[in-house]
Length: 128
Ligand code: THU
Image 1: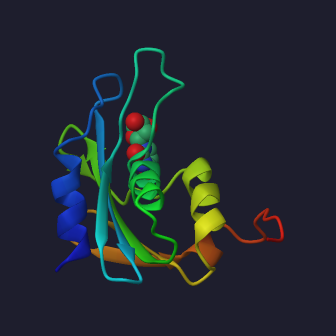
Image 2: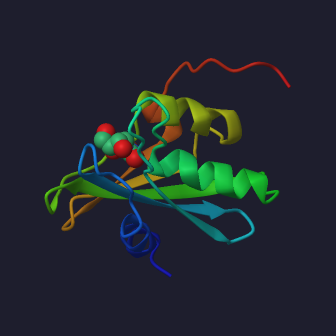
């Protein structure tokens, strides 16, 4: 199974009539399950949910607790550049993932891999 291909498939359900920026995400759990997510926009704008958070909320609400990697694919008007997660999504990831959690992004030709520690260093976390 190719995680980036699943992210591309997830993008097909993107509801993004306001930005026309379509995003899909595929979240891999330690138990080897994959949860898909897409961005879901709203006429009131602020209730917007990014693809990454959709995938996390789906997984967490199904009882998943441990995550290995996420693949993200997206763009506007059929132009796909490396779609890096927004700051809010990085913070959500930091709630549930370690620093070595892998974040894969692609422009359709090449895949880049980052760790959460690289994309959100010195993050705010409460002791559990
Ligand atoms: N978006 C995502 O879903 N994930 C990202 O990583 C970046 C941005 C969405 C939010 C909004 O629906 C649209 O893309 C344009 O910002």
